[in-house]
Length: 438
Image 1 (cartoon, rainbow, N blue to C red):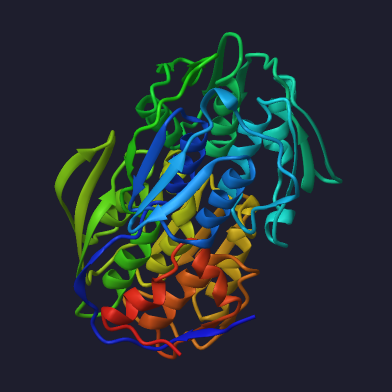
Image 2 (cartoon, rainbow, N blue to C red; image 1 turned 30 degrees about the vertical axis):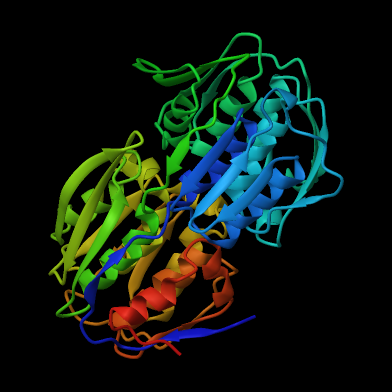
């Protein structure tokens, strides 16, 4: 276990390129492995989660190589996924394992899945139960946890599934399994989740239909689909950019620019929320690359105010609530975050972990079953000084390191090595702008 401390920081400045989006990186490797031909991927995130997904696709038979900054995936095409010869260890990669379960379940093979202690504590039945309706069999540890074995089928049954989770992982696993069904598979979401799978499937030549109807958003794929390799340019990760933006907003005198940030409306809720809080955040140079909206961001130190975050916005920023809570700690007034129960089944119980860390660092907060309230310090610096237990959660670690940079006394976190799962150059990027760590 490694420890990392942030120190009170002077003004941050600089122009940086956001690290590659983790969600797009996972999906490009998985779809590339299914496609016919060679998929070339630029800008891929070199975090451990993504590298574990690459190893998994290799275990299923795909040929993956790196040529400079370009990753090349020679897809399996009509041959299809092959049965792995050993357990597949996804480490901490929840997106990787859940999407891969959907894919492997659509082939007549057996695959054994496991992960690190954090991943083995996260719920998998929410993925495998709908897959079972499609003909996939599985066995898992009590409580619906890893390790598990997924026994796929060559005769996938198309289903219409209503998901109340607001989870792109649930939706994506079902749609990916449905690619080999004889008919149309549909997922209906009352709260639309991120749509990267749908967008990317179209890029690989799959017939995808999305409709907003009275009972929710319908996403459908027509089965017996053939994927054709294509080039993928991975945009910058808005979840990673959010840490950089909030750091600039709460550290006096800061002025930074972050280039190439994905601004998909189903991922950009954090930036909308920060602007509502009074953030001096400029979004410019907007363009569309490979079906995804991209922009550059300029963030400057700001006097923030507390707000009530609309619960319906939660799916578009579910990973960003811990860093939003840090911004709220420096705002004037109370910030209310409701409808965020999904945070309790992430890498850690992020509601509890955020609450505990705030209290330990002198910030007043209240925890609810599906909510968090943060009483801002009205522009005053929280005292900081605490050692935060992260339970291996990279987003908790980065959030409280940023609080430490703007606090009176800094913050120390444990299991700092887990930051590498999603943002491997976090410390390098922050110190390059003027932050201090030890």
